[in-house]
Amino acid sequence: MSVLLRPPIPTARLPMLPLAAGLAAADAIRAVAGLTVDLRWPNDLLLGSRKTGGILVESKISGGAVDFAVVGIGMNVHQESFDFDLATPATSLDLETGQRVSRQHLLVALLKSLEREALGLADSAAGVTIPARVEQASSWIRGGGLRCTVRRPVRE
Image: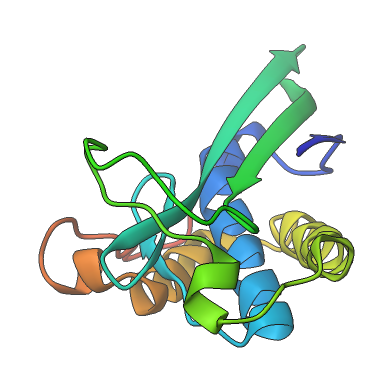
């Protein structure tokens, strides 16, 4: 899905939007499918070592302000098989749960989470809280693949 957002955030916080979208997707999957997502920076959603989705954000800034952002989130929900030659092995929510996951319930949960996370970027503390939450949700970051800590708030 692709969602057009007009987030009321300073341009300095726009780079955190993909991180916030990852947190929103992980929250929606947890709420609907009961699965814990491992965020692989910068845009992969993993269940164990298998990829179940990805995130891409495009934005437009004009006059020093965020005009809009398009958040694209793809998730494997009902797929039953995948090519063996993928760079990262893939899986789907149905395969991981052993049940048919409702795409409608997932969409509603995702939109609610995405709205909450995008609006949360307007908070001046987001420059610290978002990276800290992503670090908690990413075994790759915690394992030393990347340092995502911010020592002081991002200045606007």
